Image (cartoon, rainbow, N blue to C red; front, side):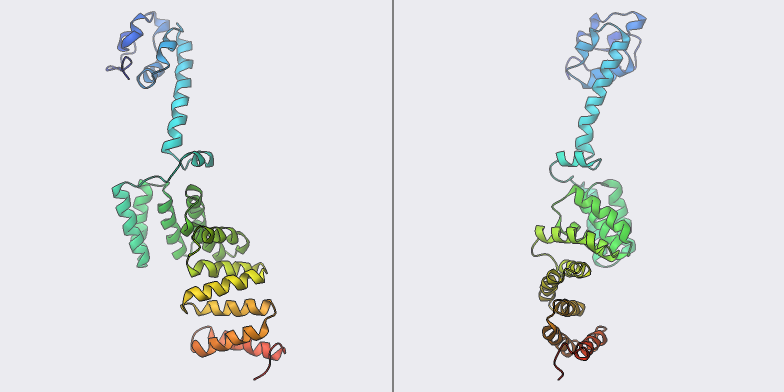
Length: 294
């Protein structure tokens, strides 16, 4: 800022502390520059000359204050992108992590994967202090809260993560799971659907949660389609998904198909926790005359 730099900013009694064109400023006590003018003259190119010509202390103070507000608004948009929805919309991309924060985040994610929740809490707490508005950090905090069954806290941080980064399919999926775990299936459908829209190859758990949400809302055809997709993608890892398929088939009136699914389940998953439930449902279908008796 050539022409306006001040090497002695604390000598407010003598206007000569301002370089450049400030020598002509009147030296009467009522017209001495204020502290605000000193700050403004060092950071702003386009205001000092006009401010100096006003010729009275009150005018100078008003001009400097206006300049302060203008600079702060510009800085707030770029340095604090999570300060509000309007600011978020104007800032492209995601805030970057420093190497130290990235290292702490990697350690936290590794601890989460290994279910070492105490270690994860320590590392993620550190990275939250370093980068509180980073969506990846907020996502990791949400997963930690999900693992601790703190659904409400998970919902809070994951909602913030999706606001900052609306392109994160995992964050939307985790938010939907947090809402499902609270029994709020109506609200869970939107983020779960958004996650699959962003990532059509998303995890089967997302489809299972969405199928359960549809079923609770009595949207049975949608529940059937989504539960069948979840079953196809789970590769037999979640026997409970099969029961949801059978439920959905029953709800749409396809009783024989539901019975066939339950029989295959009893054949392939004998001894699991869901075996008793599947056998009871099959017996109820037969007792109610919905299927042919073998």
